[in-house]
Length: 358
Image 1 (cartoon, one colour):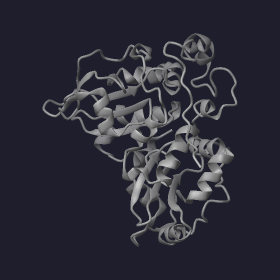
Image 2: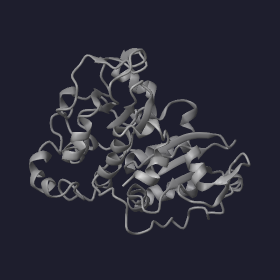
Image 3: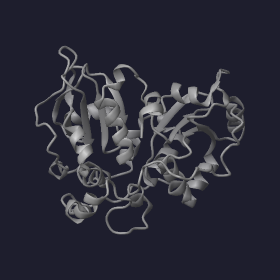
Image 4: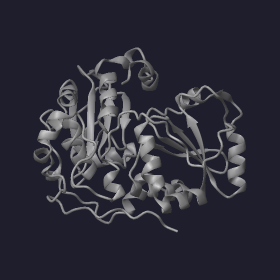
């Protein structure tokens, strides 16, 4: 049974959201973020990007086919292996809009539910929880401490374990159904033993050539040459690198919706902001001084999602990576954390967000 079929892209220059800034100008002036953009659609892959990502009023409820939260991962792993399944640990939050999207959109699709239940056993972890968890190595710690250890800065995060109990694949954040299907197949068929997820995902789309002129422009993007080396002489301010591609619906939504909010756009002007074509041979000197190309750097980083935003400090150390569906609320928190230089006193973003996030 194969789930993954990448959606067909529009020809370069015919992006469905190319007129979005004009169509939404009046609406976005009145509201910081729209609940939906563009024409009404029943396509779950399109609807996956158009939602308000602020915390939900209602608490999330797990599907009844998730493992009961006994919080003994050794027992859950043994039961999964005995049933011929892969253990997945789900890290989430009860009010997280992205977690709700996973349940309401992806797990509302019968094919995804059937495939997940057949191949995986899912154990839920509340990243704020104080209940004790027995990890696969026998360590006992709280749900919150386990989430911190596994660096689940962005929820939902899914951690896949092989039959030996080794973590082999991780998803950080929410992905639309077609990429989520690909991730499930990638893990179920152990493709991680032979190739990266980026390579596997690319094989599902036979049109991986894009028009670089189709990228969305922003006035705060700095022009080439892209000399990003901070290993010898530190930068004066943080660096953000946008990895994007042409004919990219998610990129269009980011630029046509989130980046049209004046506060967000203004914050990016306080960064060194660079845009790179994910598939181009554009020369780049990376923050650690390596001479490469945009495509090769993206491959080395294991990037598979566009747009991906990478944030670096003044010394060129990566601080955070946003490589999943991204909305106003999540981006605003990250920009406040990095723009305020909070990483200098609190290097863990999730700990900072406990007391400073919106």
